[in-house]
Length: 224
Ligand code: ADE
View 1: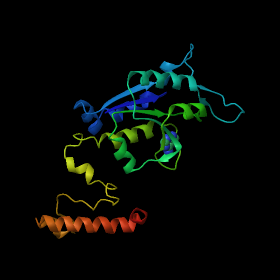
View 2 (view 1 turned 180 degrees about the vertical axis):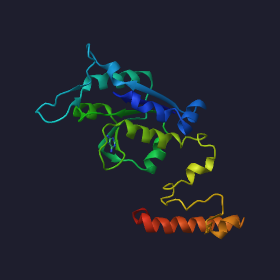
View 3 (view 1 turned 30 degrees about the vertical axis):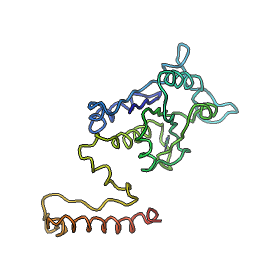
Protein backbone atom coordinates (compact mmCIF):
# COMPACT_ATOMS: atom_id res chain seq x y z
CA UNK A 1 0.00 0.00 0.00
CA UNK A 2 1.10 3.55 -0.69
CA UNK A 3 -0.05 6.49 1.43
CA UNK A 4 0.69 10.07 0.36
CA UNK A 5 0.25 12.56 3.19
CA UNK A 6 0.00 16.26 2.37
CA UNK A 7 0.64 18.85 5.06
CA UNK A 8 1.98 22.36 5.49
CA UNK A 9 3.81 21.27 8.67
CA UNK A 10 5.35 17.96 7.49
CA UNK A 11 7.97 18.00 10.26
CA UNK A 12 5.16 17.21 12.72
CA UNK A 13 4.83 13.76 11.23
CA UNK A 14 8.35 12.42 10.96
CA UNK A 15 8.90 10.69 14.29
CA UNK A 16 5.74 8.54 14.60
CA UNK A 17 6.38 7.13 11.14
CA UNK A 18 9.99 6.21 11.86
CA UNK A 19 9.50 3.91 14.82
CA UNK A 20 7.91 0.66 15.84
CA UNK A 21 5.27 -1.00 13.68
CA UNK A 22 4.98 1.66 10.96
CA UNK A 23 8.75 1.72 10.57
CA UNK A 24 8.86 -2.07 10.22
CA UNK A 25 5.97 -2.04 7.73
CA UNK A 26 7.96 0.34 5.54
CA UNK A 27 11.19 -1.64 5.92
CA UNK A 28 9.39 -4.82 4.90
CA UNK A 29 8.12 -3.04 1.78
CA UNK A 30 4.48 -3.53 2.79
CA UNK A 31 3.76 0.17 3.25
CA UNK A 32 5.18 3.17 1.43
CA UNK A 33 4.56 6.55 3.06
CA UNK A 34 5.36 9.75 1.21
CA UNK A 35 5.02 13.11 2.94
CA UNK A 36 4.52 16.20 0.81
CA UNK A 37 4.97 19.78 1.92
CA UNK A 38 2.00 21.80 0.64
CA UNK A 39 4.29 24.83 0.36
CA UNK A 40 6.21 23.09 -2.43
CA UNK A 41 3.07 23.53 -4.53
CA UNK A 42 2.48 27.18 -3.64
CA UNK A 43 3.44 30.10 -5.86
CA UNK A 44 5.44 33.24 -5.14
CA UNK A 45 8.41 34.17 -3.04
CA UNK A 46 6.59 33.43 0.20
CA UNK A 47 5.00 30.19 -1.03
CA UNK A 48 1.79 31.28 0.65
CA UNK A 49 -0.69 28.47 1.34
CA UNK A 50 -3.28 30.46 3.31
CA UNK A 51 -5.21 33.72 3.02
CA UNK A 52 -7.88 35.81 4.77
CA UNK A 53 -11.49 34.57 4.64
CA UNK A 54 -13.88 36.31 2.24
CA UNK A 55 -16.56 37.99 4.32
CA UNK A 56 -14.21 38.48 7.25
CA UNK A 57 -13.88 36.48 10.44
CA UNK A 58 -11.15 34.95 12.54
CA UNK A 59 -8.38 32.71 11.25
CA UNK A 60 -6.73 32.00 7.94
CA UNK A 61 -8.07 29.71 5.23
CA UNK A 62 -6.04 27.24 3.16
CA UNK A 63 -6.06 28.30 -0.48
CA UNK A 64 -7.35 26.08 -3.25
CA UNK A 65 -4.47 26.47 -5.75
CA UNK A 66 -1.66 24.63 -3.88
CA UNK A 67 -4.10 21.85 -2.92
CA UNK A 68 -5.23 21.53 -6.55
CA UNK A 69 -1.67 21.47 -7.83
CA UNK A 70 -0.50 18.89 -5.30
CA UNK A 71 -3.42 16.49 -5.73
CA UNK A 72 -3.37 16.84 -9.52
CA UNK A 73 0.38 16.14 -9.60
CA UNK A 74 -0.03 12.99 -7.52
CA UNK A 75 -3.15 11.81 -9.37
CA UNK A 76 -1.35 12.14 -12.71
CA UNK A 77 1.18 9.55 -11.52
CA UNK A 78 -1.18 6.85 -10.21
CA UNK A 79 -4.83 6.40 -9.39
CA UNK A 80 -5.98 6.68 -5.80
CA UNK A 81 -8.67 4.63 -4.08
CA UNK A 82 -9.57 7.53 -1.81
CA UNK A 83 -8.47 11.14 -1.40
CA UNK A 84 -9.16 11.95 2.22
CA UNK A 85 -9.49 15.29 3.98
CA UNK A 86 -8.94 15.17 7.75
CA UNK A 87 -11.41 17.55 9.40
CA UNK A 88 -13.38 17.66 12.65
CA UNK A 89 -16.62 17.92 10.65
CA UNK A 90 -15.95 14.71 8.70
CA UNK A 91 -17.37 11.20 9.21
CA UNK A 92 -16.14 9.80 12.52
CA UNK A 93 -13.38 7.24 12.04
CA UNK A 94 -13.94 3.73 13.38
CA UNK A 95 -12.60 0.19 13.00
CA UNK A 96 -14.85 -0.83 10.06
CA UNK A 97 -13.59 2.24 8.18
CA UNK A 98 -9.97 1.29 9.00
CA UNK A 99 -10.62 -2.27 7.80
CA UNK A 100 -12.06 -1.05 4.53
CA UNK A 101 -9.27 1.47 3.89
CA UNK A 102 -6.61 -1.16 4.64
CA UNK A 103 -7.68 -2.93 1.42
CA UNK A 104 -6.66 0.10 -0.67
CA UNK A 105 -3.70 0.27 -3.01
CA UNK A 106 -3.09 4.02 -2.93
CA UNK A 107 -4.44 6.69 -0.58
CA UNK A 108 -3.97 10.43 -0.25
CA UNK A 109 -4.49 11.91 3.20
CA UNK A 110 -4.63 15.70 3.40
CA UNK A 111 -3.92 17.25 6.79
CA UNK A 112 -5.58 20.64 7.05
CA UNK A 113 -4.36 23.48 9.20
CA UNK A 114 -5.47 26.95 10.16
CA UNK A 115 -9.19 27.76 10.27
CA UNK A 116 -10.17 25.58 7.37
CA UNK A 117 -9.85 24.77 3.70
CA UNK A 118 -11.60 26.65 0.89
CA UNK A 119 -14.91 24.84 0.37
CA UNK A 120 -14.33 24.57 -3.38
CA UNK A 121 -11.24 22.43 -2.75
CA UNK A 122 -13.26 20.19 -0.44
CA UNK A 123 -15.96 19.80 -3.08
CA UNK A 124 -13.63 19.23 -6.02
CA UNK A 125 -10.77 17.07 -4.83
CA UNK A 126 -11.78 14.82 -1.95
CA UNK A 127 -13.65 11.53 -1.95
CA UNK A 128 -13.85 11.24 1.86
CA UNK A 129 -13.81 13.60 4.83
CA UNK A 130 -12.81 11.97 8.11
CA UNK A 131 -12.76 13.13 11.74
CA UNK A 132 -10.98 11.17 14.46
CA UNK A 133 -13.44 12.34 17.11
CA UNK A 134 -15.60 15.15 18.39
CA UNK A 135 -12.83 17.50 19.49
CA UNK A 136 -10.74 20.05 17.61
CA UNK A 137 -6.98 19.67 17.22
CA UNK A 138 -4.69 22.40 15.96
CA UNK A 139 -4.18 20.63 12.66
CA UNK A 140 -4.90 17.49 10.69
CA UNK A 141 -1.40 16.06 11.09
CA UNK A 142 -2.08 14.00 14.21
CA UNK A 143 -5.39 12.75 12.76
CA UNK A 144 -3.55 11.79 9.53
CA UNK A 145 -1.09 9.79 11.63
CA UNK A 146 -3.90 8.13 13.56
CA UNK A 147 -5.44 7.03 10.28
CA UNK A 148 -2.11 5.84 8.88
CA UNK A 149 -1.37 3.81 12.01
CA UNK A 150 -4.83 2.24 12.24
CA UNK A 151 -4.75 1.31 8.54
CA UNK A 152 -1.07 0.35 8.29
CA UNK A 153 -1.16 -2.21 11.09
CA UNK A 154 -4.00 -4.07 9.33
CA UNK A 155 -1.99 -4.74 6.16
CA UNK A 156 -1.27 -8.49 6.08
CA UNK A 157 2.26 -9.22 7.27
CA UNK A 158 2.74 -5.94 9.14
CA UNK A 159 2.04 -7.37 12.59
CA UNK A 160 4.26 -10.27 13.57
CA UNK A 161 1.43 -12.32 14.98
CA UNK A 162 -1.15 -12.49 12.19
CA UNK A 163 -3.95 -13.13 14.64
CA UNK A 164 -3.31 -10.13 16.81
CA UNK A 165 -4.95 -7.48 14.62
CA UNK A 166 -8.04 -9.65 14.32
CA UNK A 167 -8.43 -10.07 18.08
CA UNK A 168 -8.11 -6.33 18.80
CA UNK A 169 -10.80 -4.52 20.69
CA UNK A 170 -13.56 -3.43 18.27
CA UNK A 171 -12.73 -6.02 15.59
CA UNK A 172 -15.82 -8.02 16.58
CA UNK A 173 -17.64 -5.05 18.11
CA UNK A 174 -16.38 -6.16 21.55
CA UNK A 175 -13.69 -4.72 23.79
CA UNK A 176 -10.70 -6.95 24.53
CA UNK A 177 -10.73 -9.28 27.52
CA UNK A 178 -8.23 -8.32 30.25
CA UNK A 179 -4.67 -9.60 29.76
CA UNK A 180 -1.97 -10.57 32.28
CA UNK A 181 1.70 -11.52 32.32
CA UNK A 182 4.21 -12.64 34.96
CA UNK A 183 4.32 -12.58 37.93
CA UNK A 184 1.16 -14.60 38.58
CA UNK A 185 1.02 -13.09 42.07
CA UNK A 186 1.83 -9.38 42.63
CA UNK A 187 1.50 -8.45 46.32
CA UNK A 188 -1.44 -10.82 46.69
CA UNK A 189 -3.12 -9.74 43.42
CA UNK A 190 -3.38 -12.95 41.48
CA UNK A 191 -4.09 -13.81 37.87
CA UNK A 192 -7.43 -15.54 37.08
CA UNK A 193 -6.92 -19.27 37.66
CA UNK A 194 -8.25 -20.32 34.26
CA UNK A 195 -5.39 -18.55 32.44
CA UNK A 196 -2.88 -20.75 34.25
CA UNK A 197 -4.84 -23.95 33.61
CA UNK A 198 -3.41 -24.71 30.16
CA UNK A 199 -6.95 -25.62 29.06
CA UNK A 200 -7.22 -23.67 25.79
CA UNK A 201 -10.95 -24.16 25.20
CA UNK A 202 -11.76 -22.96 28.73
CA UNK A 203 -9.42 -20.00 28.30
CA UNK A 204 -11.17 -18.97 25.04
CA UNK A 205 -14.56 -19.33 26.71
CA UNK A 206 -13.41 -17.16 29.62
CA UNK A 207 -12.01 -14.51 27.24
CA UNK A 208 -15.25 -14.34 25.28
CA UNK A 209 -17.29 -13.98 28.44
CA UNK A 210 -14.98 -11.30 29.86
CA UNK A 211 -15.01 -9.40 26.55
CA UNK A 212 -18.79 -9.46 26.61
CA UNK A 213 -19.04 -8.37 30.28
CA UNK A 214 -16.50 -5.58 29.79
CA UNK A 215 -18.29 -4.28 26.69
CA UNK A 216 -21.64 -4.43 28.47
CA UNK A 217 -20.22 -2.43 31.36
CA UNK A 218 -18.05 0.13 29.55
CA UNK A 219 -19.52 0.43 26.02
CA UNK A 220 -23.08 -0.91 25.95
CA UNK A 221 -23.63 1.09 22.74
CA UNK A 222 -21.39 -1.42 20.89
CA UNK A 223 -23.81 -4.24 21.71
CA UNK A 224 -26.84 -2.51 20.19
N1 ADE B 1 -8.39 18.49 12.48
C1 ADE B 1 -8.60 19.12 13.65
N2 ADE B 1 -9.30 18.37 14.49
C2 ADE B 1 -9.56 17.19 13.84
C3 ADE B 1 -10.26 16.02 14.17
N3 ADE B 1 -10.84 15.85 15.35
N4 ADE B 1 -10.31 15.03 13.25
C4 ADE B 1 -9.74 15.19 12.05
N5 ADE B 1 -9.07 16.27 11.66
C5 ADE B 1 -8.99 17.29 12.56
